[in-house]
Image 1 (cartoon, rainbow, N blue to C red):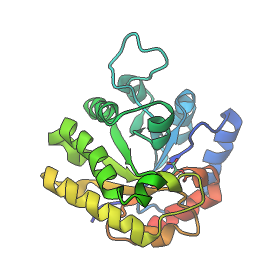
Image 2: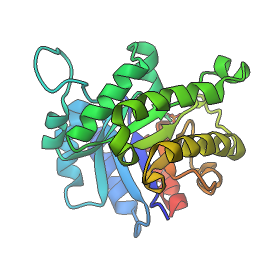
Image 3: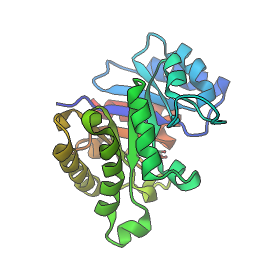
Length: 247
Ligand code: PEP
């Protein structure tokens, strides 16, 4: 039985005072946890979050990691730097980075590889656009995206976390139905099985307008091992409800 993971993606939101208030509300509202919980914060706030989450049961995550170790890569943050702030997870290949920053499957795979080598678990995002879904290409797209990561990370592929995030569902309020999500998760699970000695270890999260109202149904699906939560992770009560639904 895989322990579920609920990871909040704050995206480019927050501020010193707002972060403190949000984390305090979360910590005050957390009951005994039966799932893992993480907050993926903007890089400048990792030090603050490291302090706020110290001795808590919430793990710290980043929203990206460089594919390089160090050097002349202005603006990038290395996995070694992330580790210095106690970061356990790093999102890689979020659709917003693929779309606005031109990240290819190859770059995403290299980022996942660098994260794993540096001791940070990559949360690898895959997902189709609306046009791709309507053209019947969902399976082809997510398999291609995951195949690139499997190809580069072969032997340690069971250590990654996968997040299925249909692009049309991110930040739109349109959620994949539990059946639609489960169908894609089963495809990804089969792909991992064919590639890994320990496929049962790999968590496959769902992300895309998961909220307090729909989380329980999505999380009840056999191949949905947790959630990557954007908007709803910025509201303590909603995020706590989702965490409770995972238990
Ligand atoms: C995300 O940013 O990964 C995400 C799933 O966002 P939202 O929950 O707001 O759709």
